[in-house]
Image (cartoon, rainbow, N blue to C red):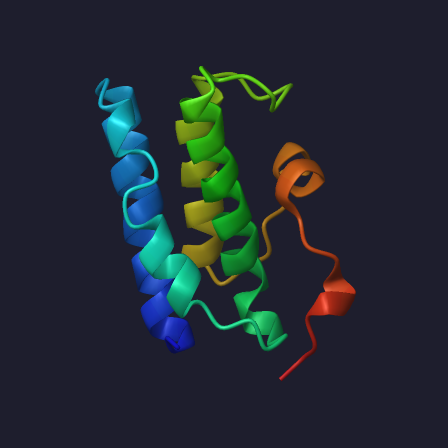
Length: 117
């Protein structure tokens, strides 16, 4: 399992890299590295990881949307995904909670699943 710092750095790089890739027309790169993160992200309930778990859920949905021609995640449209990814990355970088209401509605994790450490 990764430490918080390792997981945070990995997620920040991935979200930004894939946002750039999609905007440059390389949508096949969306989802690259997801499995490595999924396997290594701790799930012990530590509240520090909450934003990273939301980001992982978002990333999974982003990949799924790409695989299904950008369907099934209304109101999120194809061009919204990179912007939302950067918004999540900014929150993670600042060690803040993800606050975008659409992201939380679609990909949020109940707070009771995380406990303070």
